[in-house]
View (cartoon, rainbow, N blue to C red):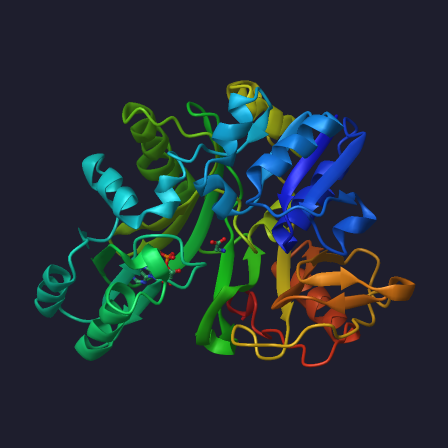
Length: 421
Ligand code: AMP
Ligand code: GLY
């Protein structure tokens, strides 16, 4: 089989790493990939949103299966385009991706079908949103409706902060048209967890749960990022809770989409809050999570290509998907200044100084002259360790991280710390 993975982050490197282990694979391509994926696949110099060029390349090569990583191409309908051409592709259609690309759509769906979520109201009119916000207690949550690279949500502790966020979103349009509408919702307290599932539109099969870390500094301080680390499994989220989320959230959501005439296929990602009043949905994503994928796939014992094919071919009910009992910890190394402005082009050293079993998934990296690898983005590498226990996995990751160096590098020191103390 010839497989194409669309995207160039550590999530896509992890997908490619796992796909490459399948005995079915003869050729593997990424678009655009990164310096890490260049070692296991061929990188195509195409942007993930350049749908027509990607389809043409896939046809020319004779790609048997395309796997879409990021949300932007999904939202703009890359799956519809490939399907129209009769090319097998893993991911939801543009319409189905609305479950992620419109918070108003997701909220209405959850309310209509009784899927547990925080109380919230959608607005497309600023003064109405403002009047409603004035009447709400704080803390309160303001969410830009559209895709905003994970930055469109403000958890506001005071009325002033909430009004500022609303104005920035709807009046100043700091997230562009993503802020044409907003959802204003109640603030929940509890533990956050991500539960992702494969679905062919009918059968839903959960992956193992994972936790990610969104803020840049230890102790959940500082601005939000694309994700600074993750681990699996979370001790507070047992098999019974997974079963509960399947019955009350994931299966009902897939049924609801079918009932709405928008069948959902691919990965459905539920961002959850475990509250004293049950598990509730903070958000849905229409894809694999980053950096959750980097700790979920190392625990997958089954051939990923079999699972992806079963999903695409509506045969997920026949698939047997097995997971290891191991613990897995991922720590992201970022450029100095990230998630604010940062410089790139710094040589990365020490990648050959790691314990053999450490996985390094690249994101913002580029190969220069003499095969020297340089930084080329905000999040540069995800360093992943696996162990029989969380303590072992965590110790391995943090023992190896100091061996990798580039100017200005920083990473969180507290990934999975709450699981071992
Ligand atoms: P989202 O993109 O909707 O997952 O929101 C980003 C982050 O904001 C989440 O990971 C939570 O930490 C926080 N958040 C979102 N919605 C709520 C809520 N209703 N209550 C408390 N925190 C929230
Ligand atoms: N880890 C959050 C996301 O993938 O959106």
